Amino acid sequence: MAEFAVSRAPQKITTLGLGSCVGASIFDPLVKVGGMIHIMLPYSSMALKSENPAKFADTGLPLLVERLEQLGASRSRMFMKIVGGAEMFKIDGPDDRLRIGARNIEAVESICQEMSLPIVARSVGGNTGKSIVLNLEDGSVQIRMISGIIVI
Image (cartoon, rainbow, N blue to C red; front, side, top):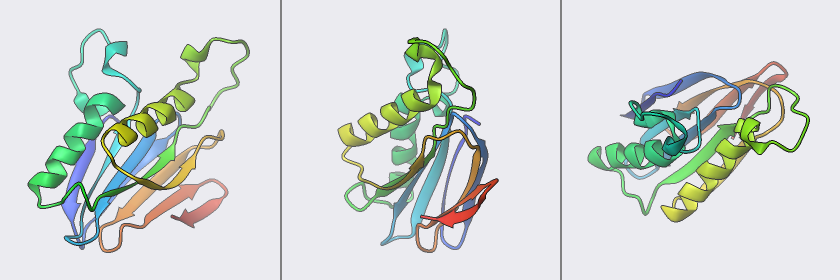
């Protein structure tokens, strides 16, 4: 959690245990460079101190893009896939602060729009945990859930 990694083909990048967290993968198909981040919270302003930029959507996504560009990726060719953002516990009442999964999804989508990063596939929401593997040969993302495996 709260980590990111970048690499190039033929490597694969994995993150495990996405509940309310969002796993965001970014891929540049021309140079076969990609990365993934395991986002725990939407905004760094939610923390007393921001010791780890990968923990938050607003600081982690720009950092991930920067590292991909250092490996030769171009923002104009990058696309994203996002997974996770589940509500793992039933929350009654109007307090949206406790709906971290939905808030994470909303923040990632908003930041991607601001950064002109197209989201081409999603597997978000619900109430099931997921683990994902990004294949840097083709940008596919394998999603493992208790109900089975899908690829987006």
